[in-house]
Image: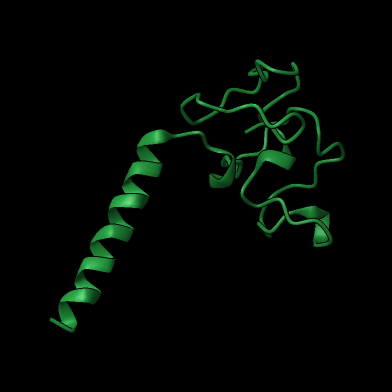
Length: 97
């Protein structure tokens, strides 16, 4: 989802620098949408090798950018997670059968 308006992000990675949110028009390839965005750390980035980016809400050329999985609207990913949880639950229950 977009960091600003919460609209779903369904585009495939890597996200292009010019890609914008369909809901609000904000840039999507921004620090605030990145999995490494870590406010309070050096440069607000958890990736120590990344260059400093001044504006965390505008598109940039960071080589380390990766869309935060929490913002992905991937229904296939959700189904996989549910399937994994179900298989783990089954394996646990099998221990006591």
